[in-house]
Image 1 (cartoon, rainbow, N blue to C red):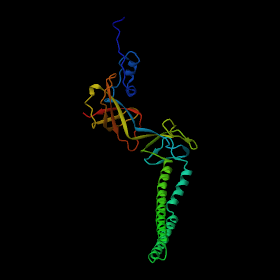
Image 2 (image 1 turned 120 degrees about the horizontal axis):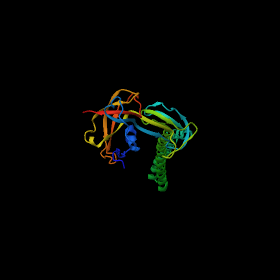
Image 3 (image 1 turned 45 degrees about the vertical axis):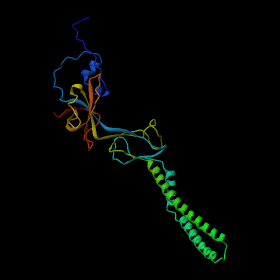
Image 4 (image 1 turned 135 degrees about the horizontal axis):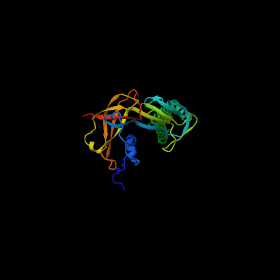
Amino acid sequence: MNRTAPFFRRPRLGSSLALRLAGPLCLAAAAGAAWPAPQDGPPPAAGHACLMEPFQKIELRSPVEATIAAVHVDRGAWVKKGQVLVDLDSAAERAALEAARYRAVMEGPVRTAQSRLEAAREKFARRDEMSKEHFIARQDRDDARTDVRVAEAALVEADENRRLAVLEQRKLAELVEQRKLRAPFNGVVTERLQQVGELAQTGEGARPILRLAQTHPLRVEVVLPVAMLGRVKTGMRGEVSLEAPLSGRHAALVTVVDRVVDSASGTFGVRLELPNPNGELPAGVKCRVRFEG
């Protein structure tokens, strides 16, 4: 064994993010290769390596199984929160909604029940007077009073049916609304996976229709050595510099500091939020961040 040969221990990186942020030297060491010889050139940029990512990425799926009637956006399109992105076939639901709306405003059953109640009350009043004068039997008077009660119940039933029609109208309106898939945030369409005429299915295993990314604000992910634990805190500001060929410096705010250190790599994660209201800054690019102080 040649004791003069340099000995290098293979580092263990604790996360995929660390590998993505690692430079060529760390990757070479991870593969067991010798460190490359120093080369002349400009010194490395100040700060810590970071990665700018979308604030969140989602897959837009349908809550119901239905045929896709229209897709109003394509890959790369900017969308606003609440914007209708996909229309599903809703012909049957819209027809049922129209019928429920008609039943909710129908006056005929209620007016019929009211007329019958008025007639029953007048009949009972006459029978009651005649019973007092002993012109008719008390049984006839009691039968007339029963007719009044039946007419009152019929009026209540007609009114309840109209209220049920109103509730049914609201339910069907919600079902029709479910056939319109809206953007949950301001962002950009990153991928379109289904086309008009295909069947949109439900569940996590179903193929999504669209993929969306929220680009305001951006998340800046940093992996720091354990020596900096306690020096970076939430609320602290950082300056993010984009790597070439991009340029520019942007202020960001620390929002998350991991409380658990990765023992294998001796690192912990930090997240910053970087405002991007106009979508000028791209997501998925490398950067460097310097913390205040």
